[in-house]
Length: 286
Image (cartoon, rainbow, N blue to C red; front, side, top):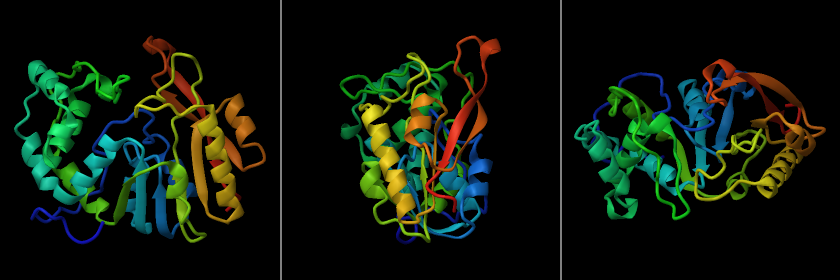
C-alpha cells in the first residue's frame, strides 16, 4: 500500500481495475447492489473475506475510499495479492513463460509453494486458477491444491492490463492474513465494512467452506453475526452477504435485511440452474 510499485513497473494505463482471479462465491452479480448501499465517501474500506475482490476493485474504480484493509485466512491468496501489489511486472514475466499444457499444469501444481520465490509462487496461483477446472480453489487435508486440469481451449493465462490495473488499485491497500474479527476492530463510523463469508450451505453437496484448509461452520457463522451487531452498536456502516436460509434469518433477526436473486451454478444439470435468493444484511439502517 505504501509507495509506488517496487519492481520498476511501467506506468499503469488508465483502466478500471477488475478481479484477476475467479473465486467461488464471487460477487460480480451483486456488485451494483452493494455499491448502491455503500457510503459515497469512505475513510477506510475493510474487506476481511477478500476472495476475488470484486467489491474492492469496484469501489477502487470509483475512488470511494481513502485506504483499504483487505484480509483473508487463505495464506496463498494473500501472498498472491501482496506480490501483485509489490512486484506485478515480475509476476507478468513469469506468467508469460507458462504454457497451457496438461503436463506442465500438474508439474506446477505439485510444486510446494514454500519452495518457490515470491513471483513464481504468485504466478503459480494465477496459472492454476486460469487453467484448473472451473477456476476452483480447493485443497486436501494436507493443504495441497488438488483441482484437476480444466477444459478451457485457450485460456488467457497472462492478462497484462488487468494485472497492472489491479496492482495500481492495491497501492492504497494494507493486505493481511488474519481472522475477520481482529481485522475490523479499528473500523470507525466514517469507514465501511463488507463481510462476504463462506456461505451457509443450502444443501449437503453445495458447501465450499473448506477452501482454505479450515471449515467455516455454524460456530464461525454465529461469531460473525456477533461482530456485525457490534459494528452496528459502534455505528460503523457494514454490509454482509450470505445465503438466504433459516440459519441466517435466525442469526440476523432484527437487523435490516433483504433478499436478492442471484444466478448460481448450483446444479450439475444446466436446465435446473436458476436464480437463488441471497441475503444482504446491514449493521444498522445507515
